[in-house]
Length: 222
Image 1 (cartoon, one colour):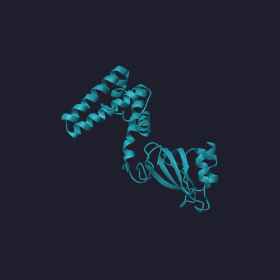
Image 2 (image 1 turned 120 degrees about the horizontal axis):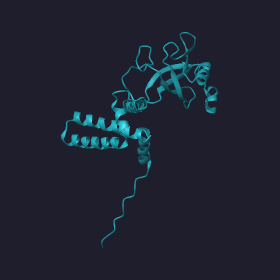
Image 3 (image 1 turned 180 degrees about the vertical axis):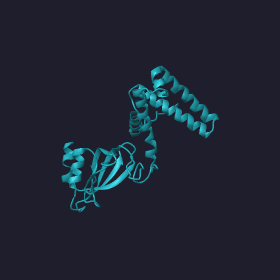
């Protein structure tokens, strides 16, 4: 528990919220809004101590740890109090479906933002790392890793050429398929260098934030 989190219960405007703090829980990777619950001070302190989200049940009148019966706990990644100190945002890693109906969130399974769809790349990256670590029989990823960096790099080059050809001569479906193949092999290549997609995103962000390069001055011929 960080010193900042230790002070969190004291910073909440408990009187303003009538002793029950609204809590939005967000997936730490995909950004999906998982659910809304409420915490009293005791529930917030229990959340900080256990590192699992603990709510106060208004219907049962007691604390309840999310997942206490299903095992689908919400492991806390970070906590953020809003500017008015009357709403808490918790980013968490779910251990399974969050909703009691079996859906990934209490708002259903359908991704509600573009960011959630892109977050599958993180899932794919994790699967690639798992395949390389566990070496399951029949795994293409495991075989590609065993072939070494040179073969992985060669595959990236081949897939890049196939993307270019599909863009010029193929259908949209063909192009999408080739792009998917290229992205998969790029993720394997990054894993071989102990890098991940977030490092690529960070590079793009730095480039975007950098001031544009000055245009070369034109020297008059006169």
